[in-house]
Image (tube, rainbow, N blue to C red; front, side, top):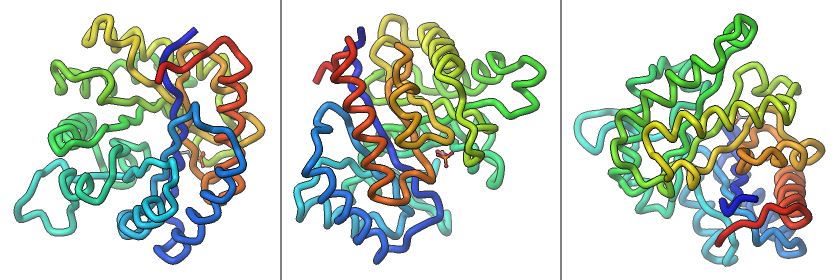
Length: 268
Ligand code: PGA
């Protein structure tokens, strides 16, 4: 039994311009009106340039959707051409931001220290960082998954001394499962998330029981329910399935049904 409220976040990555975004969220809103997903925190995570338009739709239609960003600067302000600060995002109505997604780590050279500083900047600016961690296929094959997770999460929690566990999220996203169509098994997702919670205890103590830890990687409406069954998995980070309103609504519905029909009862 958990009192952690589940989160389902849809990471659009580099897809959907601001016009497409408006259509997408409008359709999503229409679908959600016919569903009971009140027990789940639903988050859309569009590209930066869509945020303003999406936020207008959410406000105008009074949608029960939170707004997330895919990345944020580690700097608060200054001569950093091309960057967007946490405070700027917060002012737009963004409440949560992905930090250290594996695609940022791989293609844009974010190392553990940068991820940690970026998470700190998100918190300073009033955003909830959703810190993404996960091992590669090679690391998994040579049995170093737990070590990799310890290094990645340790770097962040070491930097965020005294952080309120309600103001932080972690997403376990094994790199080999992202965009491959091969999700982790619920057992593997569950044990990795349980391991992350144990690691978090070293920094957060009992507060680790409040930390929300999501699974991500090839999630769709068909496997969403089984992936949130393990007790330490508190939601899902969804990539390609979130690019259609039907796909994302399907995942949200599956998670909401799962929480309703099992012993897991969210707290607020
Ligand atoms: P995917 O992406 O669902 O397309 O595998 C997940 C992610 O990268 O967050």
